[in-house]
Amino acid sequence: MRATVLPQYGEPERLVVAELPAPAPAPGQILVRTAASAVNPVDLAVRSGSAAEYVKLPFPMVLGWDLSGVVEALGEGVTRFAVGDRIVAMSAQMATGIGTHAELVALDAAIAAPAPRGADLVHAAALPLAGLTADQALEVLGAESGSSLLVTGAVGAVGGFAVQLAAARGIRVTALVRPGDEELARSLGASEVLTSDRPLPEGVVDALFETAGYAGALAAVRDGGRAVSIVPAAAPQAERGIEVKMSFVEQDGERLAKLSGLVEAGTLTLRVADVLDFADAALAHKRLAAGGTRGKLLLAPSAAAN
Image (cartoon, rainbow, N blue to C red; front, side):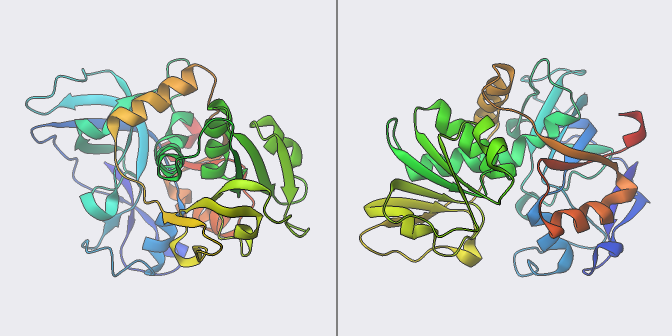
């Protein structure tokens, strides 16, 4: 099978397409023929070696944390899925050792969920990691209906889902974006939009969801408010009685199934910037590192066929 592999840490050009043995599903696993897999910031960290202390996997390494695809075979004991089912899944590669940038991926059935009905299966790969990250962080934050929330990086992959999820729960969302992204933020459900070229107003929201490492964002939170960050290297320091928590994404098939249902219902939008072939993985890494993408960059085994 074809896969995008990393022979050793380094620049994006280290990524190459190679033929690897096809996996077989172990008991409790499903074998998935990949439609697409997203490129995420964690992939850039692993590829560059900056996450080497957390990654103890042998080379050549297959990157990738999430995918969409079709079940091709079942391991012993699997009853949740059948051959031919369309699924999405998130595999925490650092923990599982299972990367998803491959034509065939064997993973635990418990971390998979039905793909959103009516959605393009390739585009469904935009959901798992970003959607779970946003949903789990909002749970950690504990913001309630009627409260106000500032989301930084509000038109990014995680931020965009956070805006949509929070607005659907009756939370008044203020989006912090780059100039030019105001209308996109409003289309996702933001009630108010602030731009990063102007100072933030102080003490105007109950809570903060920090997705972008925006220095000074905590100033917008009222005294005694709450904040959650998914950016460990730039987490805000607690002040003025504000409770600051970190949130780290975890695999969760049941939660992912609920998010898939929200896509079906139109509550969540799958935003895809581009679909590239496995052979273009280096380009995808460069584009993501450059910033400014509005939607997920996806890798597909044969992008031309999609």
